[in-house]
Length: 423
Image 1 (cartoon, one colour):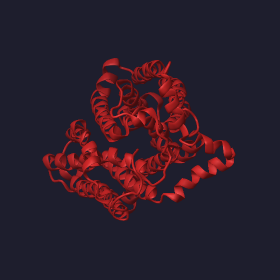
Image 2 (spheres, one colour):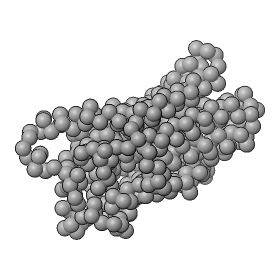
Image 3 (cartoon, rainbow, N blue to C red):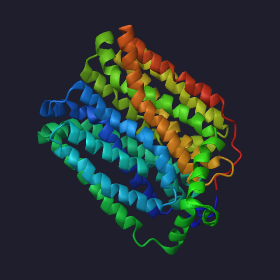
Image 4 (cartoon, rainbow, N blue to C red):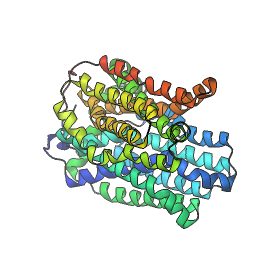
């Protein structure tokens, strides 16, 4: 990869930290609109008269759009300046989030959610490009780990206080407007941060956007696009990382969806108490996110580094489903949260692939995020279908949890070390 001013630095600048953490908050705001959708459902259903099928479609469009678009968008937009990709994305997403609050029916709400996620799919794969531009390589894992802690704190607070805000405001629409206003503040802050970038950062952008401008001038657009798609074949390790993230995502969202019902019907734990238990998924990540940086720097055996969260997630998921009381459920959910402490380290791994360019890392990021989207969207569907066929919700969720064993096998197929260097 080409050497850039950021790559030559020992430490990430304060401006770089601000840019990268703000970008993480963009992602958190969009994720809240998906994960936190259930908090709005009682109010939305009462106001708009949504059917259960329509509710399912509103959630499916969020994950389905990401699964279809992330890889193509990561290829098509890889040549564009990542700072301006995010700026345009924020400028589009803010009104799309606002119009969800204006929705008068199902179709308006569906279209607004689809356009919001479509725009987000064009922004998300730019994260490695931003990391390459603004962060010192030796701090990639640290920046990513701090971002996870910030995301966890944001989500924990939002999931805790959103229902209270909706009740106090007596309007789910105003809650959406508040989210849109927050994203509008992000837009203004982002525009200010990337305005009048120093000359060295402008030069860094050229390298971060491609690392190979001379090569781009020698080949046509179709061949360049084909080359970027070819990265999915040249680096099979990316698919293994994708399988791990698919299993983690599927088990996470399945437990989040069905565990309250299981705890109430099978274990005698009320839904109100079960909802409080879910905080343990995030509480541990707020201080524990920084552990991801230590993991990346101290576990040099990459196969073991990826296998540990897969094993922890498998054991914790099964433990949460079989827990006989609130204490055991809290312990198991804490274990599930700890598994995600490893995610920042896994996100940095593609930079270590041999002879990889930053654009190609962006494509791989899109592939791994696609697997995650499939897991987030498909896990509850599979569990629900199995529950219907076996007449047992516990069986359906247990099967999805047990499939995390595939993540262990995928991790076992990774090499102990990759041949490239993080430079």
